Image (tube, each protein chain N blue to C red):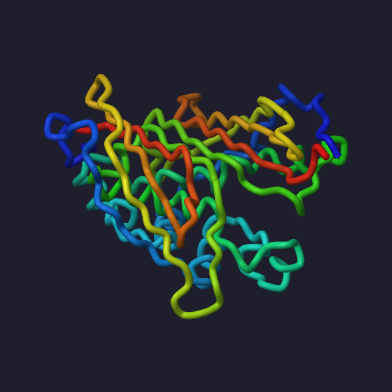
Length: 142
Length: 149
C-alpha cells in the first residue's frame, strides 16, 4: 500500500482544489441502510420538523465520509489515512427535490511531519454554512 | 436532565466479533458514492499492496458502537436519545481495516461534561483483532441538546 502523492513534492500551504459532492434524499436512505443509522431525522421530513429541524438533514457521518473521500482521492490510497477527525459544526439540510444539497470540500496541506506524514486541513461547506470544523487528516505519503 | 457521571470510566465490549466482509465494504463505499476500486475489487486492492479490499476511513462507525447500545439506553445514564446529535468524531488507524478482519470493540465512556446547556459524552472505542492486535481507535462525542439545562 502506498500513496501516489510523494512527500518530497508536497509543500506546507499547498492547496488541494475543491470538489463538490451532491447529496440527495436517496443518498441518505442508502447511507442509513449501509451504516445502520436509521434516525428518522435523516429521511423523514415530518419527524425532522417535529423535533425542530428545518427539514431532513444529512448524517454527520455522511458528510465526514465525503471528506474522507476527498482525502483518499488526493492521496491515491485509502490505506494512507492514519488519522481523521472532525467536529460537526452545522447541519446539511437536504430538500426533497432532484438537486438535493451540495457539500463543497477543499483542503490545504497544513503541516509536514516526520516519517513522510502530512496534516491536511479540510474545509466543508454547504451553502454558506461551514458544516465541518477542526477537520484534519494525517496522511502517510510515499 | 444531567447525565449520570457514575458512568465515566465504564467499558463495554462487543458480545461477538464483527466480521468485515467484501460485500459490506462495497455496500458502504457505494452508499458514500465512492467508486475507488480498492473498495470494490479484490484484485485492485491486492495490486495496491493490500491483502484484500480495504474499508473507507469512516467505515468503523458501522460496528464501533455496537457494544454501547445497552449502556447508552440504560435509564440510569439519563440520556434522551431524541435530543442527541453527533458532536465530534475521530479515527486513529494502526493499519487499514480489510475484508476478512474479525474485530472486537471495547468502548469506554471517557468523559461526561456540560457545555452551556448541553451535555457532552465522549466514547473511546479500541478496535482489535480477535488475536489482540490493535487496529483502530475511535473517539465519538455525542451531544445531548438541552441536557444540562
